[in-house]
Each structure stands twice: as structure tokens, then as C-alpha cells.
Amino acid sequence: MIVGAASERHELAIDGGFEIARGASQTTETVVVRPDGEDGQTGIGAAAPSSYYGESVESVESVLPELLDAVTGMDPTRQQTIETLLRERAPDEAAARAAVSVAVHDLAARQADEPLYRRLGLDPTLSPTSSYTVSIDSPAGMASAAQKALSAGYRVLKVKLGTDDDRARMDAIRKTVQQARIRVDANGAWTPQETIEKMEWLANAGVEFVEQPVPADNPDGLARVAEEGFLPVAADESCVTASDVPTVTDVDIVVVKLAKCGGIRPAMRQIETAHAHGLDVMLGCMVESMASLAGACHLAPLVEYADLDGSLLLSADPYEGIPMPNGNIDLSAVETGTGVTQAE
Image (cartoon, rainbow, N blue to C red; front, side):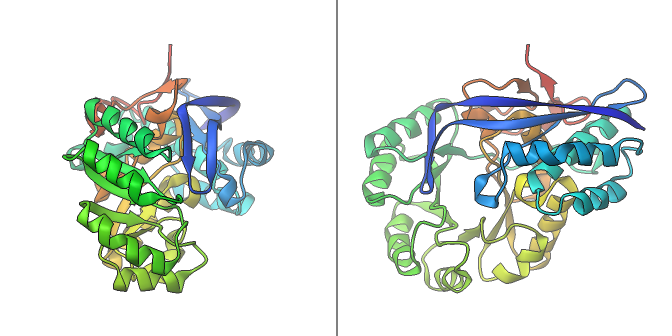
């Protein structure tokens, strides 16, 4: 039984800053939640709110007391009931619900003395390699960042584009890291026609797929790009929850993030829905602490692609957990729960 809970707020510095087509950030904020079990065990989860989805640390903190009150007194294994309660109390606060969801799943697995992936019946050896993100900078700056990531062992790169000269940036990167696997994310910055034209030279540069090339409010444009473009297309902002999957079946890949769908069970439902529609899935993340990221990592065996580098982009993370050498998600290193502990 959950007998109480606490929360704490952290401002985290991003190593070198982080820029996408919508703007730049030097820091990110998170709210960590810790539900306590009557046996002395404590679960750990965290919110990674995004202003794009209308959330902030302030909105998370405003609703967390009600969410934590809702689960206090509950058996943490009653995930179906807990998910329903969280959704009823905070239907528009997915990141806050995700924080509690991850923490309660962590607590239940700790109490069972098993890693979360095993509790979910998953095979840790099936996790795909995570990409490492190269954010927007000058062509030389992005090429340097790509080389640094490759030298550190990350052979799958996700390149942020959506600038006034995307081609120069991609040319500089590809010239510098010829052997890297590259994916591109425009965060909705292009028109459908721009996307189709850019896909030709992106394909020639060996790009694997393009993520969210057009704005989320242009489903017809996304469908056109998927039909006429030269590369596979992934839907991120256009596919927030499982209910959105039927609206993006023209694409090839759906991007699932706990912070936008609301937690472990909603993420699994979105993954299953995408697969039922014949789509591949990429598990994604925000720039976030391992306190929240670990929950998504335990779902990695379910998907074809992973972009779970959020904690790696921080200057320092107050929480540690799942090792990710060279982007390889090492779930086998987790003994109980999500594996998250407070860094010393």
C-alpha cells in the first residue's frame, strides 16, 4: 500500500544548450515524485513537461498534490485503477500523470524485487539502440557535435533541422561523420512542398527517415509527404496518444513519449495501437532526467526505434539508473524497479 509521497523540483543545465526549430534552451526543469510503500520501499518518477503541450513545472506542481492524494492508500500493483484515477483528476496534465505512473510502477516492481521490464514480461535483449541528438547550431558547430558523439560511441544520430540553410548543415555533418546512421527531425518547421524537395537530397545523404517535417495541425500535408516523399516519415507532435494513431496511418513510424501520452500504460496502449495499424514505433523523450526517462527505457523491447538520450544531454543528472553505453540500453543491469537511484 502507498502510505505517502513527496515531490521535489530540479532545474537542470543542458550541456552546451539545446536548440530546435521552435527555440533554444539552456536549462530544463523537472518535478520528481516519490511514493512510499508501507514496507519502506520508495518509487521514483518525474515529470518532463513541455510548453508545446501546454504544461510547465508550475502546472505539474499545482496538480501533483491531488494526484498523489488519489494514489495514497492504493495497492501500487492496481495499475488499471490508478491510471483511471490519474486521468480523471488531471486529464490535461500528461507529464504530471506520467511522473506518478513511472513512480508507482517503480514502487510495485521494487516491492516484487524484480526489474520493471520483467514485471511487464519483456525481453531486455530486444531493445533497439538509441539515437543521440545533434541540436541546431552553425554547420561547423553541428558537424563538430556529430563528430564528438560518434567518437563517444554513438553511431545513430538524430539531427535537428528547420533552419534557413538546412542543406549546409546536413552536408557538413555527413562530410564529417560518413559512417553514422542519421535521422532528421524538423519539429514541424517545413511546408509539405519543402519537405518533399528536401527529402531528395536527404535521401542522397543516407538519412533513414524524417520526423515530424510539417506542423502537427496539417494532417493532409503530413499524408502528402508520406505519399510523395523519398523517405519514411515519423509522426511525433501529430500523434500524442493512442487515439491519434488512426489519424496518421499514412506515415511509417509513430513516436511515443511518456510525457505526452501520460505514462507507462498509455504508452503501451499507443505502441500496440500503432503496431495494429501496421506502423513501426520509436520511443522518444524530452531533454529530461533519468528519473523520468527510465520508465520509457523499460518499454524499449516493444519498439523498432529508440530516441532515449534525454539524460545524456544534461550537464549533470541528479538521478542515475540505466547504463546506455554507445546508446545501447542495458536493461539487464537493472536489479529492481526502474533501476533509478539518486546520484551521489
